Length: 291
Image (cartoon, rainbow, N blue to C red; front, side):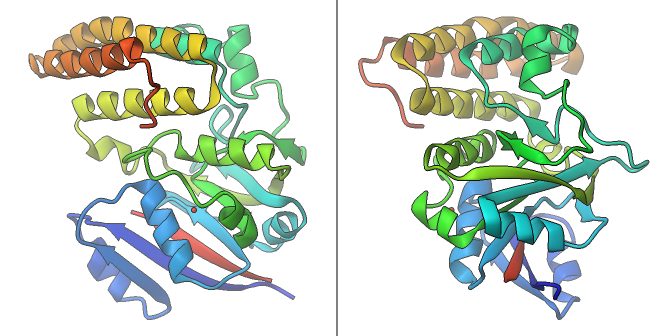
C-alpha cells in the first residue's frame, strides 16, 4: 500500500508570493517564520511539528517525478535514503546527486578552484562519484540534502540537524556523516526520481554573503570532523584563497564590495587559525519543503 503523504512547507521569511501560493492549497500545511532561521533550523522545526515515521527533505526547486514507495521502503530498512536528481530534460545530475564525504584535500581543491578548472582530476572524480553509475542502487556516503529521506528515530538519535550551519551549506553533509558514524546506512534508490532546477535559494543571497556563509560552514564542518592540523590548514586556505576570489568578484561586479567580504573572511579564518580552541560554528512520509 502506498504511504500516506503530508506536505509541510517551511517558509523562511520569503519576500515573494510563496505564502499566497501555499495558502491557496488546503492540503498543504504552512509554517511561516518571521525571519530566516536557516535550512537546518527549518528542517528541525518541521520534524518537531509533525508526527511521521519518515521525512523527505525536498527543496523548493525540486519536483517529484515518481512516487515515494521505493524511497520509503529503503528509508525504513536502512535509516536514510535518497533518489536520483535529473534536470528538465531528464539527464541525471552527476556530481550533485551523490558525493563522498569531503576530505581536507577535497576542500583544498574546492577552495583553490581546481575542481572547476580541472573537473576530471582524481580528487574531484572520487569526491563527486563521477565514476558511479547513477542507475545502480546501493549505499552512498552523502546524497544531496535537496532530496533526502530519513527515519524519525535517526533524526532523534542525531539530535536533529546542526543549526550552527547558518543559513546553509554543509548541514546535510554533517548530518549524513554523523548518521554513518551511528551505524546507519544511506541507500541510493534511482527508481525514485525528482527534477532539480538548482540554485533557487542560494542565488538570492548577495555574492559577498555567499562567500562568508560558505567559508564559515566549511570551517565548522572541518572543526567537527577533521584533526587539528587539517582544520588549521583549511583555516589558512580559506584566508589565502579569499584574496583572488575578491579580485575576481571586483572585476565581475565592477564594485569594491567584494573586498569587504574578503576582509571579513580573512579576519574570521585568521581568528580560528590562531585560536587555541576550535570554533563550533533534526509507514507515513512527511515532505518538508524549505523555502
